[in-house]
Image 1 (cartoon, rainbow, N blue to C red):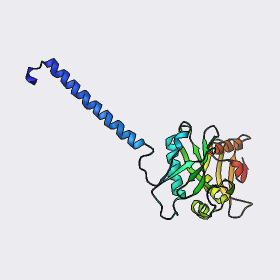
Image 2: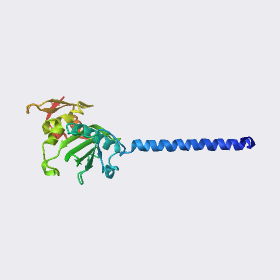
Image 3: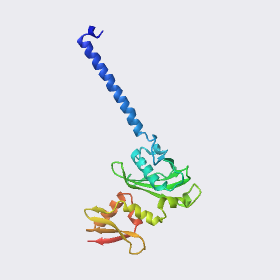
Length: 230
């Protein structure tokens, strides 16, 4: 039958066949990509935030995935009979974007283990997560589950709130700029504590350093500061 076709008809059949193969490949790749990027696809060692789609226009899926994985590593480590995946929800009216969209914070409730944590994450200008996720116990007045010491034990390994805060900011230090350098130094006023040691040049140097710290998701006024003006 093919012998009865003209060269032009054979060429048309070859083109049509090639197009069908190409379309099939595109469809297959589409579903593979969609499956791999599906936030509900199976993932291990993470906390899936079930209501994150409500906030997807403000925070990327990459950030939520990063928070879920980091929070799992911090909070689920010592949980008995732990599972590979937990489901949590952002508590209503606690989601907040601040510092021009560079910091996201909210309370994450995990009904399966009846625990809640205060989450804080710095975000770079391109929308990707920066540094470790800050995971802290919520205060008793915000608790919706029975208050126990479990949150403190899991979250901090016995560290005080002050020590947790210092460990968190340590992840971005040392911090260098044209007019400043910020490092952690032993506190001159508190035993077993640390301070931000800021070396700066000129009158604007310290302000530049403080703004740089804030841009990365930390409030310098929360820490002891030691000035070293040059």
